[in-house]
Image (cartoon, rainbow, N blue to C red; front, side, top):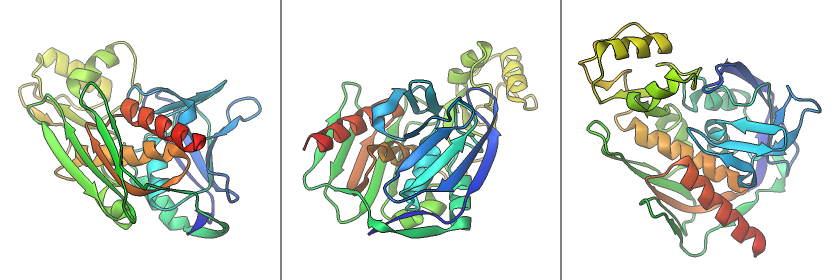
Length: 300
């Protein structure tokens, strides 16, 4: 298979989830063998680096890459869309330390990639062909296994100590199904997780339009009012538990975790021919596995 880039540039803008800054990301065509590179156009010298597991510096509520003054967070949704739609080479200009969160999914990235289309390039894709099973297991029950397969597919199981979200499963057996089956799955979080963060001034760009928020532990009405005010939403009845916005898919959290796995695995810097099975995936474990796999490949 030949490498591909996008046929034309496009831009997307919204707030950054963590900083609350207005962020614009502009995606440009790039020469063969460039990879996916992020250029911080707001910094002196406009530093630019490839999105690789080598540069992962943090993974709290998103994957963060850092090299010197160059730092970029919440890349996984854009990387997921680029990988799934077959974009091997692209330079992304951003004017802030994080990607725009948009609606918390990958659908706007997918929409724009499909709109501008792809251009075939005169170079072969760099592919890691899985010839024997590779398995990583953590002491906390996280598991990532990569098995031989004649194409790329991903299988994800998530599990939380939650009344509303216990165990869910999602599978993608054909990347051609990604736009319809995975792209609109939004990032999710629990009110009990984000309410303390709001009180100390974090996740300044979060609201009910860019995340699927799950309310499962009843709080006081005063606490709920404070939460809604901070999220820019009308006050809600604190006694009514559940999802605070409608689901795009019945198993949307599992699908979003699958979307994240694709984005984090893209940090390998190679395409994968194999089947990825992930149990209780998360950015920390995902990127640790990718770094180990990348180091293994480079040492061979």
